[in-house]
Structures are given as C-alpha cells and as structure tokens.
Length: 260
Length: 260
Image 1: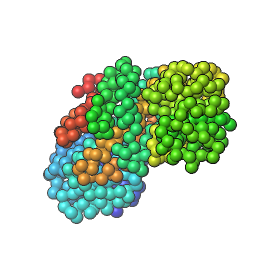
Image 2: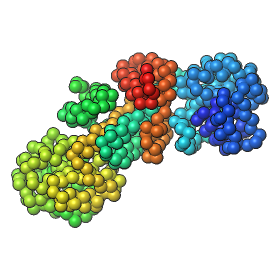
Image 3: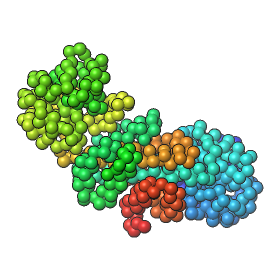
Image 4: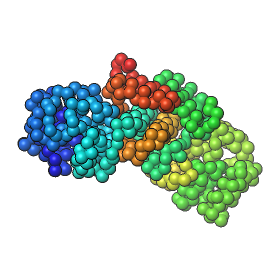
C-alpha cells in the first residue's frame, strides 16, 4: 500500500481520497487552497491524515502526490510545490504531463468518469488512464490504480486528449441533450418520465452494438417531412432549433450520400 | 382479449404483432405492401393469422386495425382501407389523428420506444401514448395497451408531437453523439470501450436527478481554455467541430449569464 498526499479537495480529490483510503492506502495529507472543503473531508478520513491550506507545508516524504485541482491551476500548484523525491501525478483529462515539468518523477492518474458531489462513484468500473515519464513510475501508478479499478489503461498525452474530447461528446453533450428534452417536455406540460425507458434503451443498445449501427429517427430515415415539422414546432426555442438542424444534418451526412 | 389486424410489417408492426399475440390477443390478419416481410412473420404467428398484400382484402370484422406503416403512408393507407366498424389507430409519434379522418372510430396507439429489427423490445416498460376520438375507444385502446405495458398515458395530438421531438433529442441525437465519440476514438486508435462506463454513469444519473442538475464538463465550468483546445483538436473534423461549438454555446447559455 502506498503513502499518498492529495492536492485539491474538489469533487475528484474528495472521491479519490475516500476511495484510496478505503482501498487501504495511507492518506498522509490533503491540501486545499480554502479550508471549507477540507473540513468536510476530515470526518471521513483517519485522525492521522493531516490537512493544510499551504503548499509550503506539504510533508516531503509521501510516495505519491496526486494533484486534483482545476485544470488551469495544475501548472501553478506543481510549480509552487517543494521539490520532493516522490511521484507527482495529476488527474486531468486535458492537461499535458509537461505541466508537472518541475518534478523529475511525474505522471498521469486520470479516472475517466464524471464526478458530482451528490452521486457516489464506484471506482471498480472506472477506467484509469495512466502515464508516467519513467517506466517504473508508470508501473507504480498502474498498481495503485488497480487497487481501485479493474480497468487500467496505459494512455499517452495525445490519446488522453482524444479520449477527453470524445468523452465531452459521449457524456457532457448527451446529458445536455437530455436536459433539452426535459425542458421541452416541462414547458409543454408533458412528463419527462415518459421518455426515461427510451433513454435507458438507447444506452443499453450502445453496450451491445456500435452506436453508428443502431441509429434511428427522422434524419436516419431522411424523413424530411418530419424534420420540417419538428423545426416548426421548435420555433419558440431558437437555440434548440439550431441544434436540431445541425444534428440532423450531421446524421443525414453520415447515412445518406446527398444530405438535404 | 381483442381481435386485431396489423397494417405494416416493418419494425414496429413486427414487434407489436409478436407482443400482442404473446399477450393473448388474436392477430386476425397482417397486411404489408410487399410479401417479403410477411413471410418473415408467418412462422412466428399462429396458422389462423391471415396475410395479405392487398388493402381491398382486409377482413371487415376485426375489433382494432393498427396502422404501423411509415408516417408519410398513414393517410393513404387509411384512405384506401374499406370502411369498417372497428377502431382504426396508428402507431406514429408525429402523425395527427386526423390522418385517419375516413374512420369515425379512430385513435392513437403510440409505443414510445426505439425499434430496431435486431434488438428485442420488452414492452412491459415501454410507455404507450393513447388517444381516441371517442372516449369509449380511448378506454378500449388503453386496456389493450395495458396488456403489453405498465405505462399507459392519455396523450393528445399536441402532447404527442412535443414528446416526439423531445425523444429525437433524448434518443436519436444522443445516439449520434455516441457515434461521433466512437468515430473520434477509432480514427485515433483509442478504444471506445474506455468510455462505456462513463456513458452508463451518465444515464444512471438521469434516472435519479434532472439532467440539468448533473451537467458537468468544460462548458458547464465555462472553461474556455479547454473548449479552445478541443476545438483545435477537432480541426480535422469540421462537422464535429461545429457541433462541439454549438453544444458548448448552448450549455454556456444555460448555466452562465454572459456566455462566451
């Protein structure tokens, strides 16, 4: 089991701190710029764990320093850390490893999952994307990841960037489309509940077949009449209307040689 | 149990024929314009079920005639049917009840689900949207729907149109975004598998909380730096890039007062 310091007590940092502690690792110290989030974590971790709001007070002999702060703060936090002999890794999907350039033993420990404070994450099914400058440190990070999850991948900076943008489509944007569907239903007095089995079915299909092969709907059928009706129906929602048009065009382009 | 004739042996007609037969109804006759799909259905239904490619050969004394043809053929099929004493209902999410104007006992029997030939549909969780010109026929259609499903709703033409356009966002468009994520992964040699737990988590959250409340991602955080990086990364995919921009703008507009 490893000795681990976590920098950042936001959603990712909190979930990782709890899960790494539960997996038997020793959480040496948790840093956060502001004290409020640290106080929320204190009751969940052993009394031996230390808490600090000062990077200068980081204890120097931890095996792994996990930087789980906002993407645009990673480089600054890395730079402000004291030089330490352990591995320094960040948990970001977008930030290159070079943001940790100050530290000779640097790497990536990126759990590809969506984290919200209110929703429990079961890490055993969360894919971890691991990288490190030194091969021995990659093995160390992979071994720690395997104590949390069955899915551990060696992923380069370039692959991680691709995964992150694909994840924005597969997760953030799909969720936003569901929010739009919910909004259209609500503002018209139709229960969004009616759509939930359809949403569940859509997802279930994806687990079994490539999404490209199970596409349905007006644009897939090149059913221009229905598309036109829907665009009329959406006239009171100009932003949704524009999205409807662009998404339909994209589907038409994919499945029909001469899209409308 | 009802006597039912089904017009149209496409995905919806086939799934309904099998499910209504399994629920104990008597499938009197199945019509399809071309014989190939009828032949595929014959082994799945009892020998007493008749099959025809001629609307003029429809048997006149069935309790319910379910029109499950393509949306743009519903009015023509309804018009070409002989006058009959039973109820005539269609299964479309977009077509108004008036498309069946020839028939005094007309209604809607719309299963809100995505049907693909290769994927089995379990109707017990499929919401049925029911409407009818005469209240007694609405009761009849609701009772038949309840033999297939636990979720039966009285839904007007206007509500059904809204539901259908919301379903295009929640189902067709989300599936297309998953296809885009798959494509981006594949063309960059990254396994799409890595994203599947994230996709499952996204859907699971929606069952518990309104999607608007669980939005995550760069646009939700107004993380313009990451959005800019992603747009650069997508330069080789101009159509995806345009979608990324429009969807991010839509999220920014929803969660931030002064969207970029």
